Image (cartoon, rainbow, N blue to C red):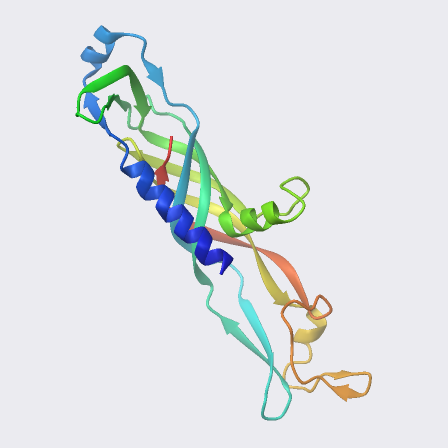
Amino acid sequence: MKKILLLIFLLNTFFSFSQIEGAKEISKEDADKLGNIKKKGIKFGVSFGFNQTFDELVDARISPIDTTLTLQNTSRTSFLLSTTLSFAILSKWLGGGRYYRKLDVSGNPVGDPYFVPSGLSIVTSINLVTFNSALGGAGLFNQKLDGGLGLGYTFGENVQLALTYEMISFRQPRDFLKELNGQTVEVNGSKLMSLNLDDNDYFIDKYIPSISLKIIYILN
């Protein structure tokens, strides 16, 4: 339920920002005439994309037929929702940039011109699910978060395409449990009838390297 509410909130934020009065691209000459040109530096955004782990992911269950442990490989591909921070690199040689002015509700240019670098960017990302969990616990400090680092390419003012190397936490069976595949699991002389994913005696949070391809909507 929390994940659904978080997704609704983020989508609402996405469309709210996308419906701001807007901006108009202007030429460098016009920007120079107006003067006081601002430059966008670090960009904050929300990303949507797909993640592919390098290692196999294993699902462990107790068979309801004969109470034996069954291990199965699960999909290594998943959908990922993240927050991102990025800053442009090599924009002078790869992509350059564009100049803009904000528009008021009547569509008239207002305020100082600003420059948005195009081309390559360094991108860092934090998985929103683990970020939300940290906020609901003891806070962000000393918390384990899923995230990654990679390169992005900026298109226009508000869109990036990024490829990142991620470290994502997955709930996985402990090694001793994997060795019991196809066997019954006995605890104090009694057969184990079910497994609880939250039971730390049998499962562990394991960080697995992966690669993600994502589209980023820049919010600032």
